[in-house]
Amino acid sequence: MAINLCELVLSSASSIQLILPLTFLFRMEKNTAEKVQVLIIGSGPAGYSAAIYASRANMNPVLYQGIQPGGQLTITTEVENYPGFPDGIQGPELMIHFEKQAQRMGADLRYGLATKVDFSSTPYKVWIDDEKLIEADAVIIATGASAKWLGIESEQRLNGYGVSACAVCDGFFFRGKEVAIVGAGDTAAEEALYLSKLCSTVHMFIRRDEMRASKIMQDRVMNTANIKMYWNTETDEILGEKSVEGVRVKNNQTNELNTIPVKGFFVAIGHTPNSEIFKDWLHMDEAGYVKTIPGTSKTNVEGVFASGDVQDKIYRQAVTAAGTGCMAALDAERYLSEKGLH
Ligand SMILES: Cc1cc2nc3c(=O)[nH]c(=O)nc-3n(C[C@H](O)[C@H](O)[C@H](O)COP(=O)(O)OP(=O)(O)OC[C@H]3O[C@@H](n4cnc5c(N)ncnc54)[C@H](O)[C@@H]3O)c2cc1C
Image (tube, rainbow, N blue to C red):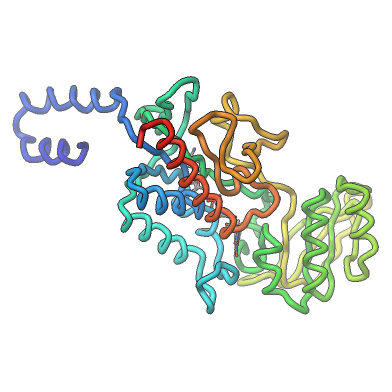
């Protein structure tokens, strides 16, 4: 619709009389709701997998990509653990495959950010970029989660070149090497233990003089011979030009600086699920992960489904996100059939 109108405006640009009514039509389009059967929010592995399944089930899904088309894998380099690629694949390339496949199946992929929702009655309302209103019989949320970072320049510069926020994803690249990890919670403890099985030494930096992790996890970390703990220690700089070569840390009690040669630097200070706009409608845990009924993608609102990292604080992998995206599309299909809407 918008493209046709644009063409019309261009072809009749000399006619003032035509342009004025067209401005009115543009405004009409902005304020008029568009009705869709299935709306998918997010374009990571979960969103695109949901789009592939929903398209193949003739549900004509519309997918909004958000500010990171392709999702988290677009900011990484080598992905070696996604099945089907025996030689590994670059993250951005993998996501182009996902996108093309969803497109080939007929999914309507669009730029835009969901900024507000109203799940009080059906069809559900979702506003895109604060202006366009979509009304959907079913909504699949696949907005992912964002890793928290320390916020230092070298961390950003070397991201994907030795700096990572995912030990399960990238630990394998540092087999037999020394690595560092920052974090003090259960996830940091788990990631340190995972790395200790692959790497020669894991240097673990803790900002305070104690860990936040549960006692059992702390005991496991402290009883692992190749995990070396550094208390009251903060990262001052990650060293290296093209890849990580070391880390300079500071003891925040004595201000003493210490340089440790490492090849990998893992940040494990938590993730933020991208669930803010749903918080008035959906049940979430204390960290903001959307709660789903175990074994399904169903949320507490009938016809609203959640998939991928936004509802998964445990596995957080591309393959699990894709799997739950598939579940969400199948759950949506059954829901629409039961309601006689499909
Ligand atoms: C550096 C790095 C390396 C990784 N390496 C691996 C690896 O090697 N193997 C592996 O299996 N996993 C890896 N992961 C984890 C993997 O990327 C995630 O588990 C996976 O991407 C989660 O998929 P998802 O679809 O749930 O969400 P995401 O990939 O996070 O995508 C979320 C999508 O939602 C969109 N979105 C968010 N909010 C909105 C909104 N309001 N409106 C519209 N769209 C919105 C975003 O634009 C994005 O497209 C890595 C992660 C990182 C950060």
